[in-house]
Amino acid sequence: MQNYKQFFKGKKITVMGLGILGRGVGYTKFLAECGADLIVTDLKTKEQLAISIKALEKFSSPKQGLGPIKFILGEHRLEDFKGRDMIIKAAGVPFDSIYIKEAKKNNIPIEMDVSLFAKLARDVKIVGVTGTRGKSMTTTLIYEILSKNIKDQKVYIGGNLRGVATLPLLKKVKDGDILICELDSWQLQGFGDSKISPNISVFTSFMPDHMNYYKNSMEKYFDDKANIFKYQKKDDVLIIRPGMKSFIKKSNVKGKLIVINPNDVIAWKFNVLGAHHRENLACAVEVAKQFDIPISKIKKTVADFKDLEGRMQLLRVYKGIKIYNDNNATTPEATIAGLEALSDQPKALPMASHRQGLWQKNIILICGGADKNLPLENLVKVVNKNCKFISLIPGGGTDRLLSNKNLKVKSYKGTDFKDIIITAINNAKRGDIVILSPSFASFGMFNNEYERNDLFMKIVKNLK
Image (cartoon, rainbow, N blue to C red; front, side):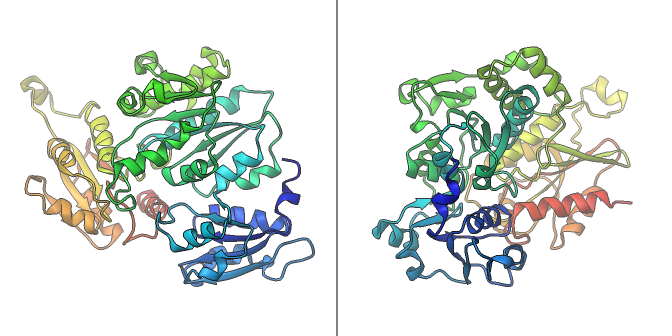
């Protein structure tokens, strides 16, 4: 680990996918600082990547000891995947990429950010979290509990969190330190290629997602996810929520398998809504137990934990209307979980309504976007039951939702995000709830889900 600079110095590395979310910039800058000879190639244009390129401009004419960067933008070229020492690919590179096939044909190693860190930092204990739903919440809870209660080792966070590149942590970590990392199916491709798994793994949930990428194959999707435990050793640990027992058998696990019991934390003070988040909490608590943290200290940290941005986050109470940001709910199942969590909350009904046992729908849903080819029937049922109005973001997923003959709720499809939000609020009254819970991907109106999140928060914050 101490020789990471020597490891990268002078190596010819092609970075496939710079992106604009920060991770690609983070590890590209790190590699240049180590003296690597870099080609950065991305299908996005120079104009689209202007912010990322500016952050790396000092490496275009590098000082002594810094590696040069050559940018190939708006295209990929086969020649950049020949005669190289390593390819570092971004998440979401297609299975059948001709460029990755070209590199493999030329016996060039294919690496990814987190798995490459794991290979080079062998004596850092890695806690990995995956799942179709719940991985960000679980990762953050684990980090909060461990970082506040472990004194002998440093605790770091990385993986798929926004703007966080993991490879540069090689500059900071020491033997015995701990890394908590959120791992999506794409990051776990790197673990599979390297035939490694985290020391402690958490698998929260598995349900359809990214079917446009996996070509409707749940098997391929699970195969990538399963890399989180596939290469564990006998002293390693896999922690799962109860719903995962039908997907993961004890006979498939080389280490210790722990199935959490959400009832163990049912009475704990926890500020985040939803039974699914109680299960995520139970997973985090089980990880903390592996580090011998006393329950009393875990409970105190959990009680102080605030909601997480973009995940059932109570953003503001505006004129008696609660506004929630559940931006990261990008599947129908995630939106269903959020709506069911809110429907369990007490409603501000007149006393006569309580006496008569009337059910009053008080949720206004903001959803919609690009289609992921996921089933919508259950979402339609839950929306019909709990929502009195839906304000829709345009996209292929929205069109498919609106074409569902079973959808009974009044709706509005806008073309301007502020207008969509204001329309939702205008259809709410005191005691109602407005929630952004998209159900679909962000592409179309937005470059990515983070852009949607930031704009939603800005618009709501500025409401007069």
